[in-house]
Structure formats: structure tokens, C-alpha cells
Amino acid sequence: MNEKPSLLIIGNSNVGKSSITRLLLPNPRKFKGKIGKHPGSTLLIKPITQIDLPYKIIDLPGFGYIRRASHRREEHIKKQIVIHIEKHHQDYFFGLVVINILRIKDEIEKYFIHNQETIPLSFELIKFLREFDIPIIVIFNKIDKVSNLDKTKSIKTFIKSAEIYELNLVHLDDHEFHNKAEIPYLEFSALKKINIEKLKKIIQKFLKEMF
Image (cartoon, rainbow, N blue to C red; front, side, top):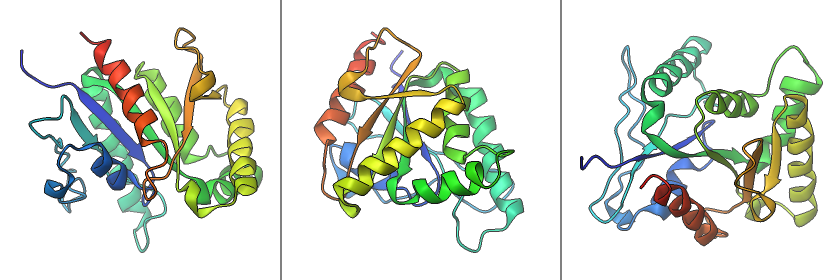
């Protein structure tokens, strides 16, 4: 069987998924950008693949924070993503949950502090993927846009809030891969290519475990 395994990249809108995808491709110039979101009754989700890339990349359409998007459209996108993952979860050897570090404070305040009956979208995504036993890493993207102090405060806020939902995030360097209760995270900048080699290394680790 010559079918390549799939790498999942998922997150809210405008978190930098396409930029990360471009960094993982052997020939990024051939990557045209976002291809997942199309009008119609379904989402056209196509794999991104290149000859020298040993896996396919599935960059799912983002939801949440879409400007001028209707609530109905948002819910439609979420529903189609859920259907896709339920159907194809066994194809994924690894998943990247991309978080925009600039939005952590607003998201936690809106969906947790001010309204504790809701769950932040990021936590909802993580919990959903874990239901299907897809190994994941949380990518805190755009760290080049914040000071070290604000970066540390935002990540700590995210980690402490995640504990309420029984999500145990630990830094990739401290992560014990035999402990499935832990979720690794990585500070990242697609623009500055900060920690891109660490990300490629962890992807290769899970890819090798498939064979």
C-alpha cells in the first residue's frame, strides 16, 4: 500500500496554519495557500502532498474569529470538520493544534472567566482529537509578536485553564512520551522559523512509529 499517512493541522481562523504548512513542505513555492474552505453544502478538504514529503498534510479550515462570517456558517464549518475527523481519524499519525498566542487572554476570558458554562474553542478541539487517540502537540504560534513576559503569562494562563478540563499540558522538552495523559506544547514562530527543527523532529518521530 503506497498511501501516505496524514498529518493533521487544525486551529481557529488566522492562527498561522498555512504558514506552518509552508515551512514543512520540501518545495513551499508550489504551495498555493489555503484550499480547504469553499462555498457549498460541504467543505472540500484536499490533502497537500509533494513527491519528497513522506506524508500528506491536511490543513483543515479554521473556525472562530472569521470576520463577517455568520454564526450559521461557523457552525456548518465546525460540523463538517467533526464529520471529517470522525471518518478519517485512523489516517492521522499526528496532529498539530495551532494556537495564536495573541488571542489566548481574550479566548479564556470570553469562554471561561466571563461564562463558565462554555468551553474555549481551543480546549474543545484538543478534547475532541484525544477522543480518537490522535497524538497531538499544541503549537503556540506568533511568539515573536509578544514580549517574553507576556508570552510566559499567556502560556501559563492557558495551561492553568486547561487543567480545569483535565488537560495536562507540558513543554515538549519535559514531555514523557510513554505518558499519554500529557500533551506536549511548543513555543513557535512561523514568521521567524523559531523551533521549526524541533517541530520537524517530533513529526518524524511519530511518522517512524507507524512503520
